[in-house]
Length: 90
Image 1 (cartoon, helix red, strand yellow):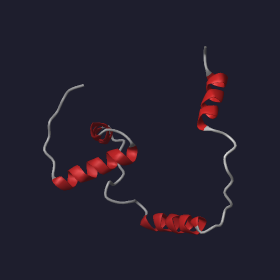
Image 2 (cartoon, one colour; image 1 turned 30 degrees about the vertical axis):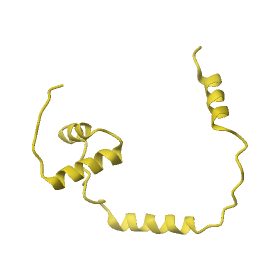
Image 3 (tube, helix red, strand yellow; image 1 turned 135 degrees about the vertical axis):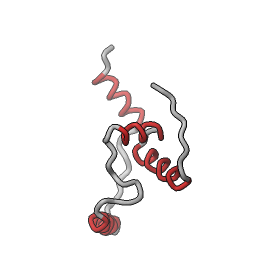
Image 4 (cartoon, one colour; image 1 turned 90 degrees about the vertical axis):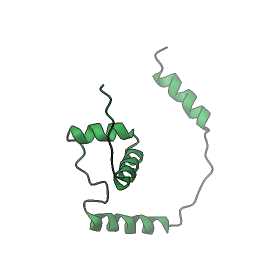
């Protein structure tokens, strides 16, 4: 890798940080992806705001449903041990 130092506007910095957080990658990785042509998404908003509005409305409707909650019959440690037993290459 070659190190580069650049200057960007505060607005660009905020957008870069938000995109990196959204994707779960470093800011440098966001820049590399954009340079490779893999990041045509707009950072400042969704491509189809109407679709996002419909999705938000659907989620809000689902959140209104009264779904009974049951206590779990397992613990996290039990699941982890089971997974290790099934998939471990020991």
